[in-house]
Image 1 (spheres, rainbow, N blue to C red):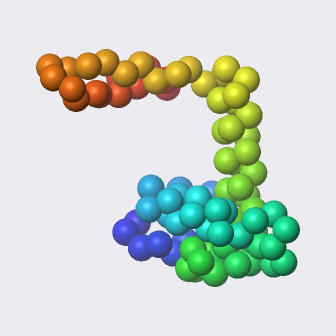
Image 2: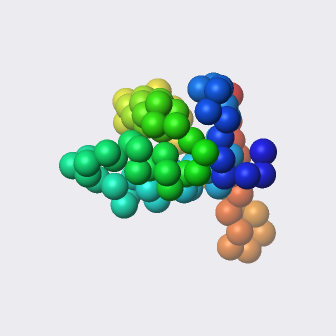
Length: 92
């Protein structure tokens, strides 16, 4: 899935890292008080419906709650050689 558009027929579509970045940037542009916020974000995403954007936001909020409540472990970073840092992902 190299494109930034999503299928409007599948609300369970997995977003790419690029799509997540566009979504995060759109959230920064369109504040909660913005009229038609979800439609504006969907338009910025390109090919995404308002419902898909709202669902992705709900998923993001749940992820944040899990992180803040300690349900998601802090990544285990370790140094290799000089100053390089590598993520040792122990979360399944």
